[in-house]
Image 1: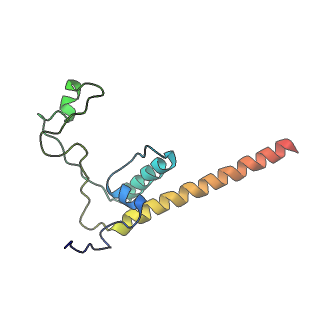
Image 2 (image 1 turned 90 degrees about the vertical axis):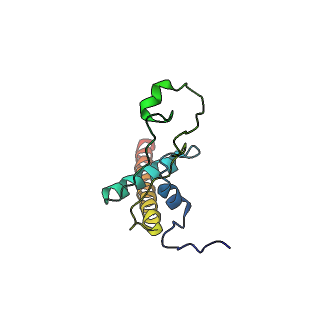
Image 3 (image 1 turned 180 degrees about the vertical axis):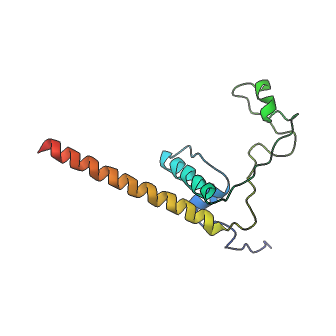
Amino acid sequence: MQPKLNPDRHPQTNGGRMVKRGYTYDIECAKTTHRLRLAQSILTGMGVTATLPEHDDKCILSPAQKFNRCFGYSYNCTCGVGVDPAPTWPEWTTGEMFDLAYRLADEVQTERGAHNQRDAQAAKRARVA
């Protein structure tokens, strides 16, 4: 039997989950990438910062060993941190915070795009007329 998850502690939207995992890039959608980065900056501006685990200096994935790696080769982590470590957030963060940060980033970008589109259409009408 699986333990019950507290809905307040875990994001309920895909965007919130991506923000909580620390993603700042979506290979499929540039708009999502921008929204993720904006949501991360919103959280950082509000004082919510994540800590990432660091690799040992002897691990090949450590920043100290970056010149010992070959381009295009997949290396395994030898220190136990993992290839793509998850960030650790403060205890007081909730899933709703990640959902709201992503939702705010989405609203900002949607309204900015709509405003720029209206300006572009008005300029086009002025040129045609």
